[in-house]
Length: 373
Image (tube, rainbow, N blue to C red):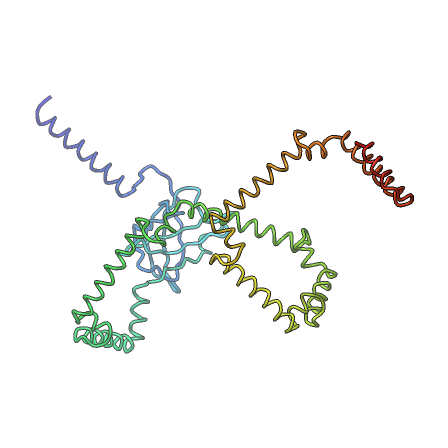
């Protein structure tokens, strides 16, 4: 195996590799079967030979030839097998990108197969041409707009108008910068939670309350639904006709000055008396606050308070002693025997007194009295 043979073999391999890469780059399929169809288009919007045919964005073929025919352009396409047009099929030329290029958007349809000659393809809208036509039709208006923009720019450069003053006047510009700085400072404080607004926006409790708003709204909706359906006392208050009439009757009595509330609202003398009572109460409360009067002294003077406490303590002590049987009055109050003896004594005295009144001898009364003790 000579050196020239190896060089020739490498050269042939390079040619084969180059051809394979060219076929892959150009989507050339040597051994694949294809279907060729011809479809008439009204216009093809710059479609050229070699442009792809796509189904839902996938390339399934390419344009092989274009030919002018009466009433349009006949386009010859090669498609992958099983993609011949069926009922409802459509073809439209679309722009591949804003930089140019076209492709055919092919919708094969569904149902029975149809003759491609019955199809009619459509072209895409040439936006640049349409824009050119619009600009041509409105050339004078566009010229006026450009002139007005030029005038506005001249006024801004001359410092005319509010915006021009902002741009040219250094003092106004400085004020504007100060306003921006203040707004930025306020926003920073709010972010840091300073001030009432910052606390309101950054407070976790407020955030939790805001999160409960949907629940509150739902509860309100449930309540209004219950009211509308007549459930609960509030619904009864709203929907009960008898209760409504009763409230209307009360309102009518108040307007006619019937009852205490009606007289209080409608009677000037009673209203004046009520105001006088309130004034007296106000004066009394003022005197109490200022320490005037006995009750005020009792409430505010420590010595008075101490005396009252001592008196109350003496009353408690006396009451406790009366409840005990270690003294005369306590025995009289707590001993049943002494109580019965006292009753008998009083009865005997009453009888003796009656006898003395009837008989009049004083010594009989004294004798009876000594016998009792």
